[in-house]
Length: 156
Image 1 (cartoon, rainbow, N blue to C red):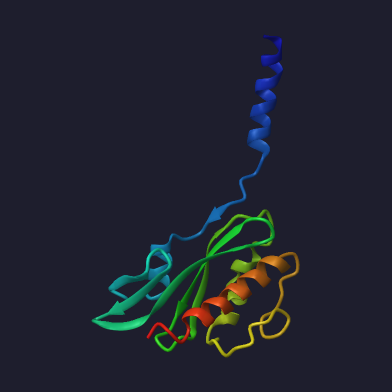
Image 2 (cartoon, rainbow, N blue to C red; image 1 turned 120 degrees about the vertical axis):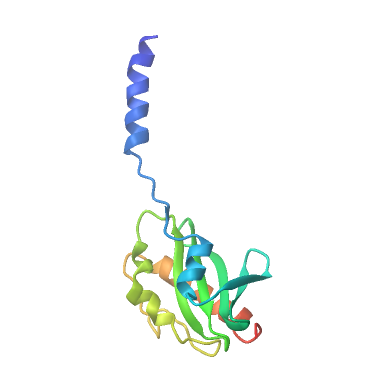
């Protein structure tokens, strides 16, 4: 029983000292309302992935949820598209890595606004890299490009 006297405090210290890096910034519903504050209804176009935002019976945009790997762990993010298929807004919903959270910076995310399926979307090209978050910024950029290719011209 003497091992308990030493093990329990050590286990408690380790569990308290190990940081939890996952940060949930927004739920899907919260991100939808931020992207399209005038929308009165969100209808699923593709279950758990794509929603149509409407206000007064008129389509105001589309909301696409996606997940990419940062360096080791998933990053949940969403891309809001205009009815014409251009990026209206990109939002990080949950970030699980221990560093590289700068990809949530409003100025970095603003680079995507207005991009279309015809845009280059290349790190160190039209999207700047973030030192210390190279893989996260690259994978989010590739994810936005993939969303634009898949949905940018097809959701109208």
